[in-house]
Length: 75
Image (cartoon, rainbow, N blue to C red; front, side, top):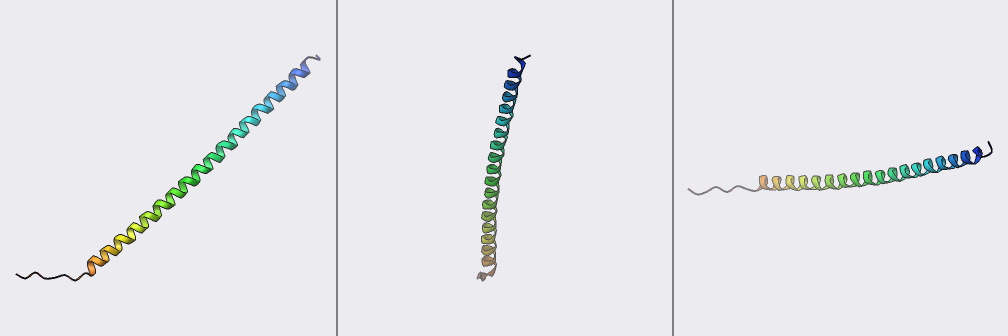
């Protein structure tokens, strides 16, 4: 019976190490996912700003074209 205790202690240590490594891997994965999510949000915001700027430029161009005086052709 005295030989069972060291085995149990070793098994307990091995299990604790296994779960500690798993927890560290999960934490690292969560950090990586948070970074990827933040990058996606930044990319979306940048693209939205570009789209809104283009739409504003298109509206200004359309307004300038509509405001330009039309000339009649002589004929």
